[in-house]
Each structure stands twice: as structure tokens, then as C-alpha cells.
Amino acid sequence: MDKLKDWDEFEIGSVLFPFKKGVDGAMELYKSERTYSGDSSFSDSVAHWRVEKPVHNSNICINCFNCWVFCPDAAILTSDDKLAGVDYVHCKGCGVCVDVCPTNPKSLLMFSDHKDNDEAIKEWPAKEPKKSQNNL
Image (cartoon, rainbow, N blue to C red; front, top):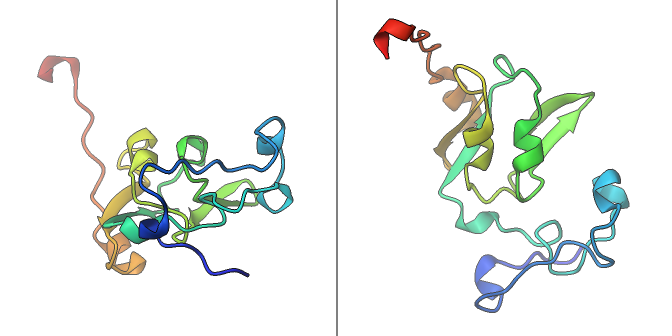
């Protein structure tokens, strides 16, 4: 496999088009079957600028796949119809997955890129109490 480019090796203002032949029908294929362009976020890592990373807590996750649908870099991993974690080679740490997560507490939270995932899980917040109409 070729060496992945670092973010600072791209021309300023670059746009990374993901597919060689356009997007028609590409999303219905598995990642391994898609024809990615040479300078796409699939073949070149955009993770080097990440400061925070999303950590997935499978004990809370309801497998709604909102994070998978909205991830701009296809960095949400799935296996056997369940979310299986985050592909940190391609995750740039934008936090979109956390924003769209509907669970209470969220099943994806942002932590320092240097924090171990098991340590992050230990720090997970408790469920927030539901607000009644009188408390609004």
C-alpha cells in the first residue's frame, strides 16, 4: 500500500473527490468494492489534524446508524448490523457523529485524541433526568 499523504501535503484549498467514476451507485457497494480516487479521504488519511476523537460506548448504543449516515469520512465501523467503533485512520474528529446521536447519555462522545478508549468509557456521564413540562 502506498504511503498516506499528511494533511499538509495537499494543495491549499484542495477538494478530495472520493470516487474515480462518480458517486452513482457507489454508496450501495461495500467499501472494499468501491473505486476510490487516489486522493480521497478513504485512501489518504485526514486524521492528522484531529485534536479530539469520538469514542463509541456499545453499552448505550441503540444502533440507529445516525452517526454512520452523517459521518463525512465514512469512519463509523459496522459489523453484524451493529456499530463496531470508529476508524481512527480516517476520522478527522469533526464531532458530527456525536451531534446526531439521539441516546441519553450519548453513545458517542468526544475525548482527547490521546485518551485511551477504555479510560474514556470509565468517565462516561450518567443518564440525564428527563425534564418535565413544569421545569421548562
